[in-house]
Amino acid sequence: MSWEVTTVVDNGSMSATASQIPFVEYLVLDDGAPHLVAHECTQCGARFFDRRNACASCFGDEFKTVSIDTEGEVCAFTIVAFAPPGVEVPFVAAVVDCGGTTVRGNIVNCPPDAEHVTLGMRVRLTTTSVGVDEHGVEAVNYAFELA
Image (cartoon, rainbow, N blue to C red; front, side):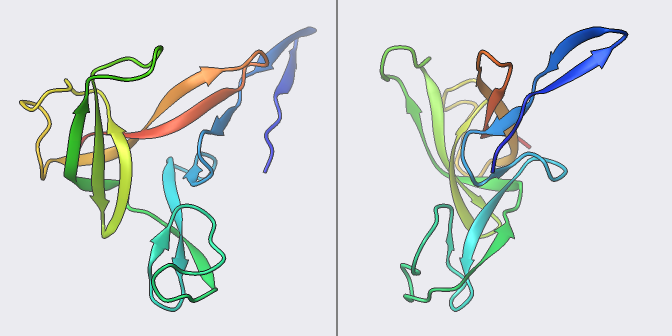
């Protein structure tokens, strides 16, 4: 999969149109609303975000791509207070149950404290900018925010 930066010519002037690329291969940006996809074992239904040669649950070797619910419930979280240089802290790392599929992601647009983040709270998928390269291409990642 590749993305190209397109150049738009308008009244003789040229300007670059910034495009986006997903930070992870299982984030879909170009098919309607942003969403996650997983590889589902056709034998047992186990889901995996990374590519697999065989299912870790049943050893099946056939998978189909399925969309993951964009809303879910926080089933575990931690407030991260220490990180490598350049990573802004504190932030909330969470495990979210999205309709039976477990997804790990950060919770954004919410104060990173136990008053505002709780087990069982409803969240929805959102996207965040990771950065823009010298060609104007933006890398986009997913996160969760309050539903």
